[in-house]
Image 1 (cartoon, rainbow, N blue to C red):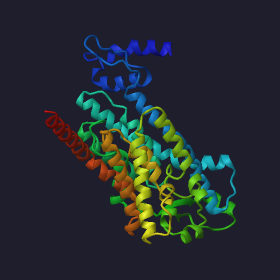
Image 2 (image 1 turned 45 degrees about the horizontal axis):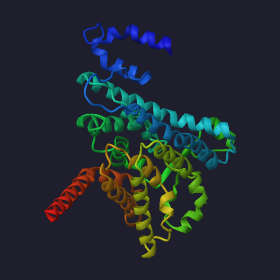
Image 3 (image 1 turned 90 degrees about the horizontal axis):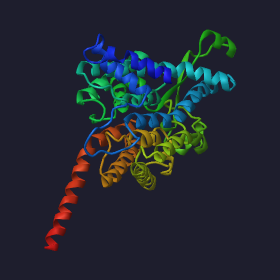
Image 4 (image 1 turned 30 degrees about the vertical axis):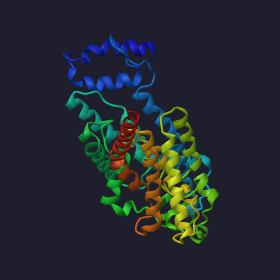
Length: 390
């Protein structure tokens, strides 16, 4: 590392303003701060000494997503093997999953970072680390068979109109990853139905291995497409299957265990708010049991937590510190409404099986209003106390 540090210091003047390649200062600075802790410090005035900066926060979120990513890669291959009865071992399953998932990550990061770097260069600003998380999230919340050109367009839309137009990381109103999914859902609904997911596609060699002609590719129903106990049983989906994650679904949303591991990392490091997570679960359970009690569904409320992207959205999306509520009381209100709205859409809207994406984006929009109301109520309450004291 010392040798790398010396090399960076040697070429750094070339990229400083006024240097031969000074127009690439933002790009060079991004790579330098990614490799090393910035050596800039305050010289006067009061300041806070803390080892936590934006880069470390984003890296912790990325690390928390690794369990879901790894399981998603395995499950992609497993669902393919199961659908065709291939009886593959662990490594062939993982290899197949990598072939299908890695291209999604390449498109997500290449397109997103290209726009981030270009925007920073044009503005003369530093490149923020925020897209490290968005680029990691996007492949986990889209179908594994989404055409790469569609994904590229959706990523470009989300980064340009959902983030850069508002000023970049920390200024965006909506979660960029969810905005990518929303763009795909409304622009290409046949690829984002929410109730079916691609589970297989065989090449010529694999067709021969299976012993006869089979479909080149097909989609299978997810648990969300079977909103009854009988429907789940017909497709062999037990509560244990959904908890483990061995069911069809978007790449990173199926395994409750992997998501909970990520939640432990986020909560242990203080990156995410436990208030939002807990209140979202409470809201989902409340509406889930309400629907169960009035006969709108025969699934007990706790099923809503392990189906679809509810927990993934609760842990990784709703807790986004930029787009969620900031006040402590507001976090409880925000989280509860996210969970309640998501399950409301699932139970009472037959046209759309999943509701987490729309619920979070809607509450992203109203998060500033929630904080405003909480702060206004607090100011009014304190003003009344002062009057009483006088």
